[in-house]
Amino acid sequence: MTSPSIHGRDGSNDTLPTNHVTDELLAAYAAGNLSEAQSLLVATHSALCPECRAAIAEFEAVGASFLEEIAPESMRAGSLDSVLARLDQEEMPANNVVQHPSSYSAPDRQIGEVLLPQPLRGYVGSDLRDVTWRPVIRGLEEAELKVSGPEFNVRLIKVAAGAAMPQHSHQGEELTLVLTGAYQDGSGRFARGDVQIADGDVDHQPTAEPDEACVCLIITDAPIKLTGRLGRLLNPFIRY
Ligand SMILES: [Zn+2]
Image (cartoon, rainbow, N blue to C red; front, side):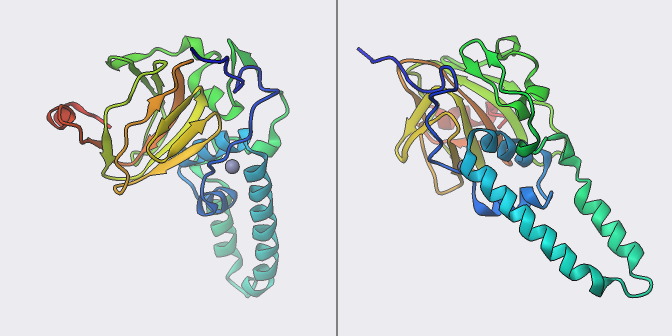
């Protein structure tokens, strides 16, 4: 028997995220130095997290005053071109397609029961229900998102209510952002807006809570490594 979930149903009574992206990621995002994949995750988390939106604004302000300070020094003859070239590089990253959270004008649109954060909409389509899910194993489906750059695999996963992901570790870094529902692993509970950062030190088996399916945005920079008894035999089949 479960009580009705109060999380993420209509957006108005969402609890705020308690697990955030790192300051390093926020600062790099503010400086425009993230890959498109990381940028998408940070922007989507920040759309759900006032605390990280404020931190990004602070980093941007610090960055702007820093540029003002170094600009006069850099204006020696002949250096203007290189400064402008550097600014071009820094201000026109490939990840510009991911809108800054503070520039959002439209309110989150309701999609089924779930509010899809704006940064994701250009990737997912107009409606979560339009996503073409590919079954992976029983209780687990995924949909790969097209993001520029070869370094990251970016996808949505949907874990059925009460279902467990295969026990796995990581060969690189895995960033998981919960969009709907919630899951738990040995380290805690992750609900809408929460980010879990896992690397080779983390061996876990995320399990969706029993009352609703859990949809997450996941980016990985190397395939995961299945560590369960059966999972070890399946590693050759795992693409991420
Ligand atoms: Zn946050």
